[in-house]
Length: 470
Image 1 (cartoon, helix red, strand yellow):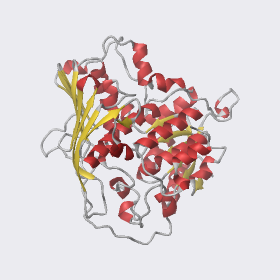
Image 2: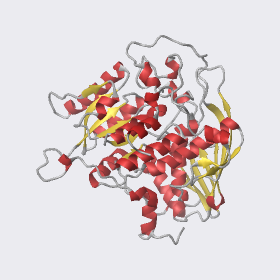
Image 3: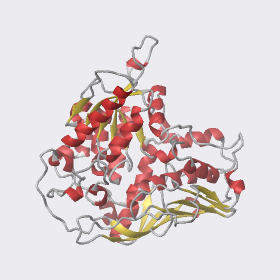
Image 4: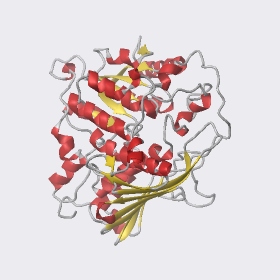
C-alpha cells in the first residue's frame, strides 16, 4: 500500500478504472458561457419526508443550486416541502417565489427546466426512481443505501453509465462536513499509520420491535398508497409501516419493515461499510465470504432484524465484524495500533448508547497513539476534496467529473450489506464472487439478490429493456 502512487490512489478513490471509463457528458447549456443568465442548477426534490427535507435544506444553501420543484405522494408532505423551499428564498429577500409541486415523479422527469433530482424516497423505490431519472438525462443525488437489493444496484449502475449522468450517493461520511473523523481515520489506515490492517469492528445500532401487531388501516386521503407501495409485495396500508401522519420528523416505519428496507444492516451498514471499503482499498471490491446470524422481529408490525453478528472476510485476510454490542462507529485495528471514528455524540436511534452522566463525551476520532492522527505529509495519499456532500455533487455536474460517492462504489457497499442480510436470512456462511456479483454455486442465496416486482410498471428490468439498455 505504501508504494502505491498518488495518481493511482486518487484514481481509485474516484471510482477506479471501471468507474472512470464513462464520464458524465450532460451539462445544462445555461451553465456554460459568459452570457448565461443563471449559473445555477435547477433541482427538484423527490420525497419530502424527514430525510427529504434534510437533503433539500442542504441543497438550498448551496450557491450552485436552485430548488425549483418538489414532489411527494403524500399531499401534506408535498405542501410542507413547497413551503420550506419558498420560505427559504423569501427570507433571503426574494418576492413572489413559486416552487412547482408534482404528485408523480414522472412529470418531474419530463420537465425540460429541471436539470437534476434529489431522490429521497423509501429504500425499495430508490432504484426505479433513480433509473428513470438517469434515462431522462437528469443528474441524481440518491440517499443511501443506493438501492434496496443487489440486482437493483447493478441495474442502476448500468443506467448511469449508459446515459453518462452524474450520480452522487448520500454517503456523506465521505465529505468534510459535518464529520471529518471518517476521512481522517480512513486516510490514516490507507497510508499505513496502523501498520498492516487486520480487523475492522463496526457498530451500526440496534432496532427494536414497535410493540404493536400488524393492524390494517384505511388509506389516508392525502396518500397515494398504490404508487408508494411500488414494487413491494401487495399488502394493506399500515401507518406504522409507512410514515407518521401526525408529524413530519418522526422516524418512518418503512425503515423497520423488510418489504421496504432491510434494517440496520443496510440502513447504517451502508454508511460504515462504505468507509471500511475506502480504508481497505475495496471501493470496487467486496468480501470473499459472508457469515451472518441475526434475530428477526416476530408478531410485530415491524419485521427487520434485531440482534446481529456478521463476519466478512476480505482480501489480504482482513476481517470485518459487525455486532450489535460494538460501539456505534468503526474501529480499525492493525499490527501497529488502532484508530476509531464515529459521529461524536449524535444519536441515531433511541436504542443508541449515550455517554453516562458525569463522564466526558467520547471523542469522535480516537487512536492508540496520537502519532497515528498527525497531519499527513505532502506525499501521502488523500481523498478527493469535498467540502459538503451536496456541494460536491453540484460541483461535479459543472466540472463534468465523477463525484466523491459514485454508483460504481456505492453499489459495492450495498452489495456487501445485502449479502450480509441474505446470510442472516439463510443463517449460514456464503461465498461471494466480486467479479460476477453473485454467490458461488448457491441458488438459494442468488435467488435473494433481487425480487419479482408486484406489477410490470415497477419492474426495473422492463424499464431498462424498453430504453434499449442490455
